[in-house]
Image (cartoon, rainbow, N blue to C red):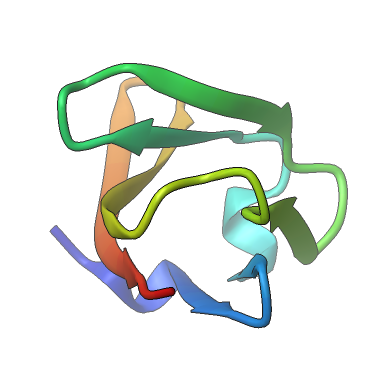
Length: 79
């Protein structure tokens, strides 16, 4: 697992995901700790934002999938 391909930061009711060019075209998914898919989008740029204003405080997982490769990072949303 090499998370240097992307970073995800939660602050100010948003999660900002920054990707390397290598992950362009990947699917970006946001999961709650119970495994529920909250949101998903296609990576068509190097910067993406998820609105978290309606999410409860807690630990979430950002997962990027490209072909057979999967990269994940956990992050905390605090209220």
